[in-house]
Image (cartoon, rainbow, N blue to C red):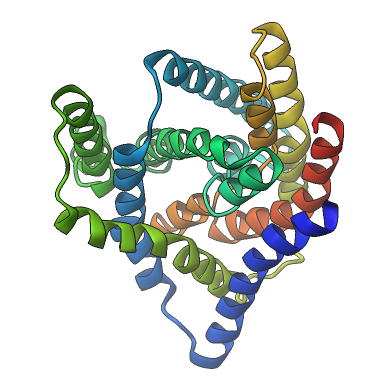
Length: 303
């Protein structure tokens, strides 16, 4: 089981990252262009498609959304407390985002499908949509709050393509359920192609950044990020499902999801706004490696 998890999930992720490293060493790729493709094209396409295709009752959506938001809020408070320590004050934005945003897409979906079953993938799709919405609203506010006033930030908010992708996706999802309206396949087919492209392009972009990172730097911040993401986060989730008496298999899915590594989108935002991108890339790299062991332990405990 542990070997299968590594070969099926961990290894493909690192193959794509490794290809990005090799491509950058050979051709010196443009990180800014790659990041903008992720930010303005592929992330909005994935968010739109996932919203259109998800199938949940109102009660299930409420449980998943409520748990996810509460879990993220607790981790944000804990991570913010860590940034009071010497050596972490200058990394507040990326450290808090590393704590609350997880790689629930290219890492989480195949892991959940393997560990719990294919029927659990829909839960991860909803979590992806929720995390993307929070990341590209609150997450961007974190990066911009010191640079611009409230009016300028609101103006920039309406320039973010994923905002329109989320709202239009919810509208069409509502129309489909209420009036049986079907989004034309001429629209969905190209958007599915784009959404499928996010995973490889994001990991290749990460590989390009890692090839330029000095891995000896940011040791303490990366250790703090790894601790809260891979150890503290699952412990908080275990306490929450116990307190709220969340039923299986949803409780198992939420616990496993709490132990995923840092989201690649943290690196995409850090690159887009030119803040702490080396720390972001290193947090993703090391939490992805270490999650092979921590997630295997969670599977052993609960499965």
